[in-house]
Length: 541
Image (cartoon, rainbow, N blue to C red; front, side):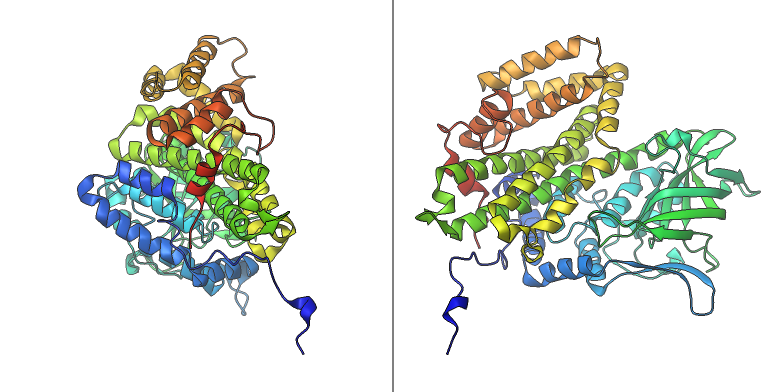
């Protein structure tokens, strides 16, 4: 006889077997908006294929396996030889391989490449976030290598390849390569000019040997790394290959892997250089200026990664609420829950819309606009990720606090993008630096937000207040976070007023710009069309 006490009722089915891309209206509309008409069918087709895989049971299982079986460091082989290898679960290689084959390491050599890649990165990150690190680093290394035409000619075809080849071999023998990065050191952290790693020149032009350490080195099983080291001319950028041309292993001592809060599938390491061969990239003393293009690209990926985490959390919360009954009806129909879901949806759509606008600016070469918009977006969107994911988890109640729901993994991942590639203070200070040194950047930013002037009185008032703040330089550093927050919100408001449905733009401007909002999510004005906002965010299976 069946045990009637174990009959399962009133549980939401898993959100699986759906197209992550086409289920996201904000994202599909952004691609439609920023991709030329003749390319839209191709873009939608490739992104839908990726979205179907991302929403499949198989990809979700890969994500679970990769995080439950984190990478392991093997410093020596069975005979005592130093090998410095990191072993990953097969699921990691499947995730990474699919990301590479889907073009997520190449935005540089195809039309509308940045928008198409950004949308794909946002979709595929929802399957699993950790493997996005080597995808991001590889993609972002291309503009740095282009400062040296010889290096670019050698490495770029492999870095932008759609072929994933694991294992350590000479890069020339591989159809595709991955890159990592090592900048920060124990004594300096974000202050990379305090680095102590030394670079001594060899007889051959551009060749050096490095001695020192890196406190955070990403993706240590990559084929090459961009690092910073001190030369006689100052801080300089270098390319460090794992395997030398003659097949010998470069000196790359992995001392340990970081035991991180989240991002468990990904290996972050501490490495030591001791007579490590390197090739200079750019001129001596211009390391920060050389590598800054990589930093800008990875910062945009932090925005996209946070937007992806928020989108997946919101999709799970709305999906659960659409099936779960309580107090006489479905949760999604309860006014208070609807308010929470709508508030979450606003954050998600604003982040997605901003991230794709930045990618489109990359395609268009809008460097002045990006100079301010990227650090402002990186500051704000990544800061919003944790409260959004935490509130979405609460929508699932106790079910959301259980590992099987997938929500705890999203929550552990949520603070990461705010820390990597420069924490909040670093981003805020970078905005101040641009405001003080690059007036064309502010002009481009104000031109962008001004495009929507006159469309919403709350946005107009926010732009006016922002101009007042920008005109007052007294105590500017101490209030930098407040200023950058306002810049990001005004920019998001401007984009939503222009491109989002009226109910979304109205709710965003009323709450984020008009001040009709509480200190917690779920405190939107009750008079807004919240049902339409929630329905727009729903991922229908």
